[in-house]
Length: 224
Image (cartoon, rainbow, N blue to C red):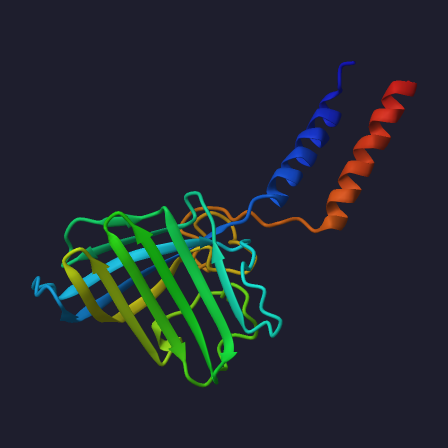
C-alpha cells in the first residue's frame, strides 16, 4: 500500500513524538573554584570544570521519607571534567553520581561524585535554610542554579598523590536550564539554550490523539 503525502507526514510526526517521549534533555553546569589545601603540595591555585546529568534519571535510593535521592546513569549526559590552573582536562565519565537532599538535618544539599582512572572528585553545596529544594528530585529550575543560591560549597579531589580540598567560586547552568527543556535555537531569552533546541516531552494525551488520527486515516485509506 502506498501512503499519500499527508499520511506519510502524519506517520513521521507520530514516530517523532514517540521518540521524543523517550529522550530527556541533558543538564550541564560549569564551575570554578580555588584550592585551599593540597596534601601533595602541587602548587595548584585554581580549578575549573563542568558536570552533566540526565534530568529523567530515577532515584536509586528507596527512602520512605522522600528526603534523599541519588541519581546516576550512562551516556554522554553523565560526565564531569576538571582542570587545575587552566591545564589539561581530567575527564570522569564512567561513574558520575548526583545526590540531592531536601530538608535533611535541617538543610538542603546538592552533591556530586565522580570516579575515574584519574582519581575521585566530590563536591557538596549546602543551603542551611532548607528552603531551596521542595523534594529530593533532581534540582531543576528555570534559569538553573548559581552559587548565590547556596550558603557553602566545598570541593575534594583525591588521586594517588594525595587529597586536595577547595571551595567553589562560581556555578552556572550551560545547557537544559529550563524546566521545559529549552526554547527555540539561539533564543536570547533562554539562558541555557546555547543554540540547541530542547526536546520537550509530549503529554500522553497528545500521543494518543496522534496515533488515533493515524489509525483512522489508514482505515479510511484501506476502505477507499
